[in-house]
Length: 140
Image 1 (cartoon, rainbow, N blue to C red):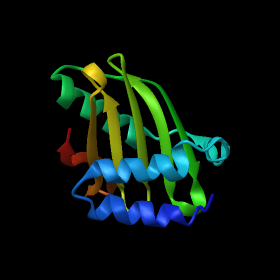
Image 2 (cartoon, helix red, strand yellow; image 1 turned 30 degrees about the vertical axis):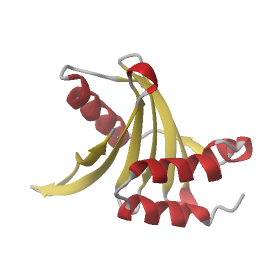
Image 3 (cartoon, helix red, strand yellow; image 1 turned 120 degrees about the vertical axis):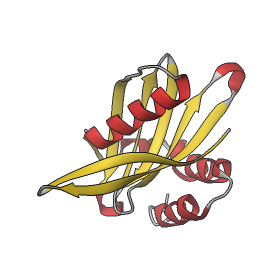
Image 4 (cartoon, one colour; image 1 turned 90 degrees about the horizontal axis):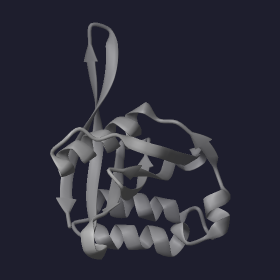
């Protein structure tokens, strides 16, 4: 396994019109590799938790909460990946902290997976900095 392929994954994430190709690249090169899944360190991310919650609210048109959010960071590549439950649906995600962009996949009904690329935006007000999540594009 070559971690430099995370750079290719980042490029695909930024330039993709078809998020399925980006998601498949991740799973072909990393997601199915038990060694990769053990790499990195467990982290928490209030930003990613807020993003998952916001995406859940938009998808289900009701209050949602990410449950059992488990995130792993490979710090040298500014990369976080993980999974959680959202309204009884399995969510997997990847996120590059240096570009504040990621990809969210949620299992829907009848084997359908929705893929959503998302970003965060830094907002500064009264000497406080906030990171605001927003969805940039969604494809089913």
